[in-house]
Image (cartoon, rainbow, N blue to C red; front, side, top):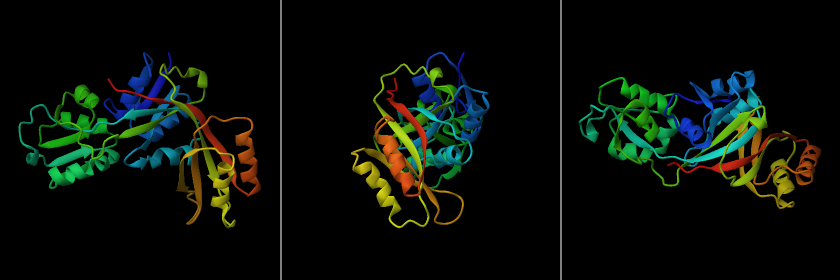
Length: 284
């Protein structure tokens, strides 16, 4: 049986994405994103699912940096899941909102609910957890006047009360999850493919004036649509960056080799992080 790893414990949005996308496969939670990626690389699990980007908070930098600098695994698919953040409390909590002294959650979840916290819980101390699931688990283990921010699955898994629903600051909150595997044949996502995408890692030469403009031109004159371009530090010194470029089409034998050859002629290095289907999930 295929084993799928995810950022755990139970009740995280990653677990919710896995449950929505996959059927009866064995599922195993990991405490951190690097642990999950390492488990795929070592063969401990067959597939890993990790958060890649949130519509409100942007890129999950740990995921991108670890895939670029530590373990280079191909992205085999992308799962897009709507995110609904709720304020969760212990089932025995009978106080009012102002009684809550602490809020626990993942840093991205806290940031997605910043305005709500600022307006309704300005005196509550914020504590960051490794995941929304872990925060919910902590709330279930104490009767103190504390709360977690998480999803309905976390409330169900840990027997918590949803004190208030949908406390995220902006509607249309979605998160992209990367599905990582060494063997594409293991993927059995039985949902309709929305579109296909190719992600590239491009390193610019440090001494080439106007290099970024020419990189973008290589895609532009070929009429290739870019859905994202983002810079990240190379970690080799100030001013050294690599770029992640998402192209809204699958890899082909004409346009992409042409782009690669053109960019390499400029002194750039080009690596393909993955060419893969994108699935948009609806939560029941």
